[in-house]
Image: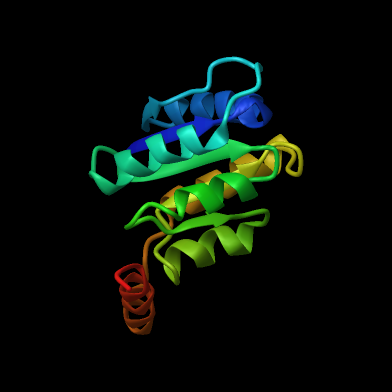
Length: 146
């Protein structure tokens, strides 16, 4: 599986840790940056990851910033993206199974590394349950077209 990942300066350490973890576990990573702790504008990285997911150059995306919130707001502006801020394992599974989320947003300043990696593992291995959930996701997609 190919996963696009990006961050701003507030999420760089978490992004680097996730990349090492996912690479070790056999995932192919597209790292769109940022590559230092110098202040950057998070919407640039959210857009870059989102466009890779929408274009199918990556199957999923992960974005890291201080809280995950800014990244999710920016990524969700891209048609076809369903980005979710996740801070617990139950939500990681539910957002893939029920919402077919395709971008995971995490906050380096609010999550410990162990929990963050557990969330990543659960999220990347969970699948969309379809059924009644597909109808609801389709309804969300219709909202994008209005």
